[in-house]
Image (cartoon, rainbow, N blue to C red; front, side, top):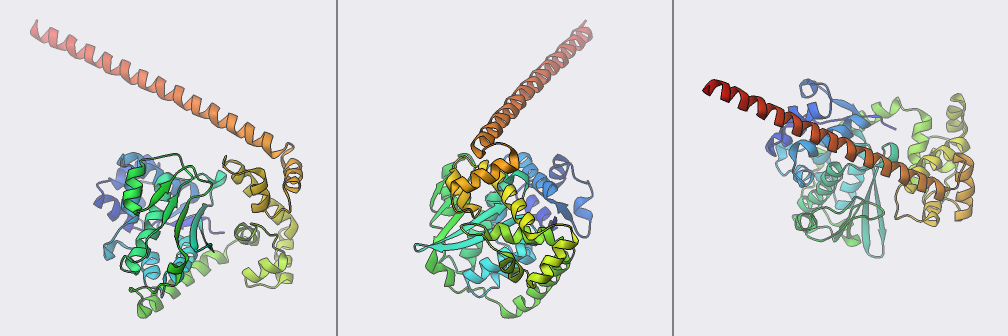
Length: 371
């Protein structure tokens, strides 16, 4: 799994176009002041999330992610966007987006079709699985803009769901042109399934022939240094829902033989079964933090035959049943929120006293001057 992600230098131009100071964002995110002067910027997952969270805080604009993701000027589009726009169809564009976005963002894009609908779902590969609202907005707006631009406006979302708390609904419904729901179990864009095979009017064979090999080369170089354990975990995360992939399934995904993959894992002192259990444990913690997911749903998403099997496994991992673990996490989160509120109140009080003190000194100097 790629652990460092490229931040396009075009991000600086986009921020400036939206009236946001790139330098202020970098300071707020506590990143190197020379960030945008570097030839190639690679950030860790936490640094990247800090950057986009700082964008939201510095801008003070609830729609900043939507604006940044809807960039229309060709000179401000990055190489991944250009490759996706050059694809043959919306389906092809989504596949290329899912593959090449690995280079720029710690996310997985999952595309599924069911009942005449196509669901484009994002899952963030971050400790705890928390979303960054600005980054989610940006990615959703980017996919919607990609669909619209590639088909000359023929493909638009039919509804949008966000995991996060309610925000300005009118803002989002005006932007996406469809119904928007918050506090959903997953962040998902929905399109008509028939739209997947709609050809792209922006299809450019020659440009794609230049961009795709370049992206594939960079992807291969970054993955070559990957730990096979992380590679297996990445495949398992995509494949676990409703089934239990075996060693042969994962080896096939990694273009390896089962024997070679087993040997590579053995060199690290782990077995495929151990990595499978680690993946399930990591995902279980992520899913349990989503209050809308029932234990039966989580068991299914982790590939267990029933909820009891999941409960037994989780109790073995954590020493307590998943329901009790979830309650404990909620209490800890509430304690952190209360502590943050107390801290903000103290800071506001401190600033208020400082302003009063400064005003008092100012009045004293004025009286002295008059006297």
